[in-house]
Length: 271
Image (spheres, rainbow, N blue to C red):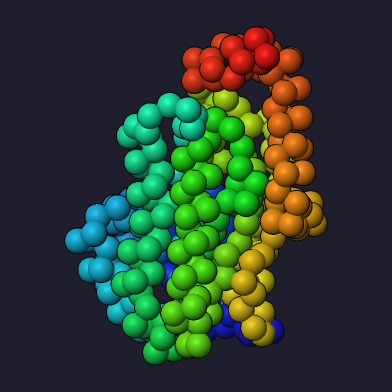
């Protein structure tokens, strides 16, 4: 297992729930850490301000962060957004935003950081989601964007894997502001997805960063490993598991007051 001491690390979404704790853990382990987020922070960990959806701003801010660190050994693509987006409705700005932040921002950042990562034979870790392999209804944009992120990571691994390690971490639901807009729309995932502690997600990211060989896919819990295995090897069973849970939530009236779930409620009442 590789030590984090002295490793130069760049974390996107550094001001968020995962980002703050990850930067703290990395710093405690002796890494030299910088972050990127919408709002700059001048503190123990320097966070560079940047809108990662800007194709013109990202290369410059990544270059500035790499210069600040004196090189780059590890990039953690952690920035992400969520929001309700039923698959049966036309895509709107919520969908566009999730695709931009969850997929294209990570793509832009990685592309800008690759020369430095290749020079150091470093690693890149993508924070995806269990929904990349086990999708849930009413959150199509999030699942699509995270599945696309995994596809990007897979393609990247084939291109640069001889020189740069590429890993993907798959958290489930963690208590975080990322779920606020979904809950406000009456589409809470409570009862559909099980909460897990943020510390477990950070531990999984650190495992991916420090393992002797970069792991391809990293689950954050034993349940997560089971769900990922079922989704990949028995997709019809995975669909049935999700459908049964969602049906029970519909029968309990959990989505009755949610306009975005009106189609599902109507079909449940008129099978």
